[in-house]
Length: 346
Image 1 (cartoon, rainbow, N blue to C red):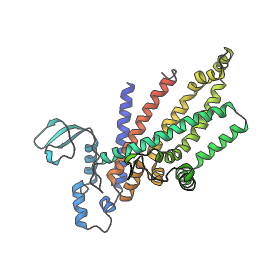
Image 2 (image 1 turned 120 degrees about the horizontal axis):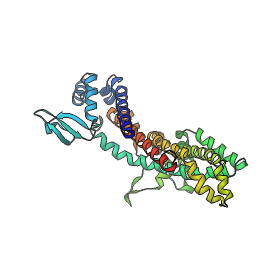
Image 3 (image 1 turned 135 degrees about the vertical axis):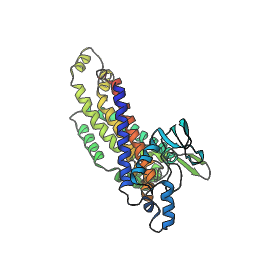
Image 4 (image 1 turned 90 degrees about the horizontal axis):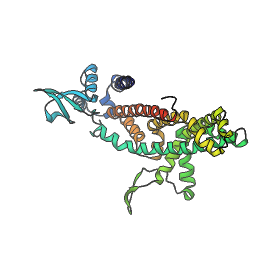
């Protein structure tokens, strides 16, 4: 029953996201084709594109067509020459039939490429960047949170909490600009880090290769705010756990402080930290726009900026839907991890 409720919640959430995105990108846009092509394009070209993408239909018809394309079960013409995607026919009539298929996001207004292909090309770059930033935040945040909790009330505790508060307050774009200027330009001879570049790099001597050094500055910049949040969250959680009775019992049994921390404090303090980390991971996947743009990192953020500049509505809709699905998957993963960490939830 719980699984059925979860499934229905996911279904209605996705349906609401699709409806909202459709109304924002197509319902409120006066002319999506004119926005994409510019005012200098002739009316004949604009009308041909409207007809090709079905934008000359009433808004209600466009909405139903969008739901039909995105649904894994849809009704489509049986003429194979008119199909832009493939699937398995459940029922096939003379003109139309019912098909099982992957959701079809359409094609880009700008280059006529499949939106799914564009998303799959960009997602790995953003995923690697976000996971690296979260890894930095989790490792350093837990370590520094443990140090502040162990030295509670000292000058070190106050200094680290103050620095973390500053880290939370700095916007990502400002941190990216400062990191690029100081670490990538001013102190480049010492750091050897480039200002811009993607994971896959190309040069005359090595050809196409993976350039991990290009990941350092974007991942560090993107991880500053979650690092500060994890530090403060873990510090508060550690201090709360240290004050509980079972910690005093563990110490009374003669366990060392490291054993107390490792086997009792850490696991019992991880639930709020896990919630914070998974929430920030989804936010980083969606909010790496400024960092990717400043550092020239090829990912969903850069694709979003390019699509906004070109008014490429199918690509924008695909990005929003993909990020929404990632949010829901991470939320389900968070619930599973909570059940594993805290048996009381089970």
